[in-house]
Length: 203
Picture (cartoon, rainbow, N blue to C red):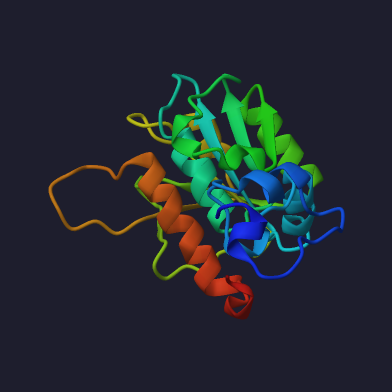
């Protein structure tokens, strides 16, 4: 969107949600139209009234390049928070700046994440195609949960699988052994949305 004066016939709004610089110069950010010209703080505050009670966690013991994609998708589905387990640093390019609007938490180890989830009353759901996993397509996901994903390649770590309350797998029909971690996270999050979200609140 260009400057407010070029896009609208009305005077610019004056309430605190709006950024005077964006009103004057235009807003080229990747945000929904409802948030055009808003300050970042105002957008986060409004999102906090809309977030869903599921969290997303991804293990990052080898600088997984999919974390940015996971963060962007978690933002799209209004996840409560994204938890990075392991290395604190990650490639933000795939997040497309959505990490500015998404709550992020860091845990040094899987044990730290599990302890946090237990204290928060959240069910830990590991997503991996391992023996004994329940089909994501038919399982009822807990409403208050952490969807836990492993890094690309090795998948969910043994410690994480052992500590999880539930493990689910995504049905596959081709030749590949696994789905990209970022794609798997999107599928699992959307499964939660289909089961629990109020679709009337979607943009």
